[in-house]
View 1 (tube, helix red, strand yellow):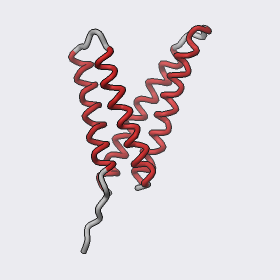
View 2 (tube, rainbow, N blue to C red):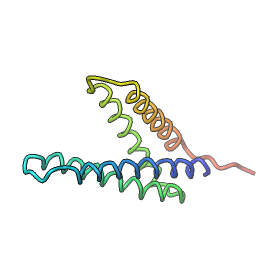
View 3 (cartoon, rainbow, N blue to C red):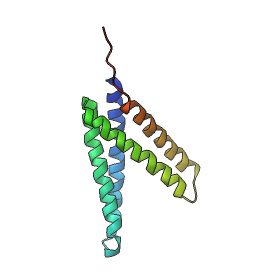
View 4 (cartoon, rainbow, N blue to C red):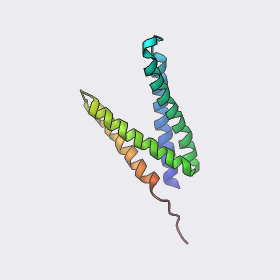
Length: 122
């Protein structure tokens, strides 16, 4: 149970930081008509991060559905991190370190969240 609480707090911080960045990017976009697809993609990611914040709060409280949601969100994070590293032309050391650490964190979260929960017997 303590593992889920720690993961809930870490994913709350991660999703909160992502939501803040997406909102900042949304507000920085100019109001031209050619950027509507970009706006909808950023708004969708922001809503996904808001759902991650809600799920991480329920993960802290021990809800089973939150384990599955955060696990799927972690898989999405790993796949998008790998896609970013593959598609980026110039990879700087800082970008690779941050992307790799996020991918490792998300992968370990998937392993810890989707393993069956065993309660001690005695």
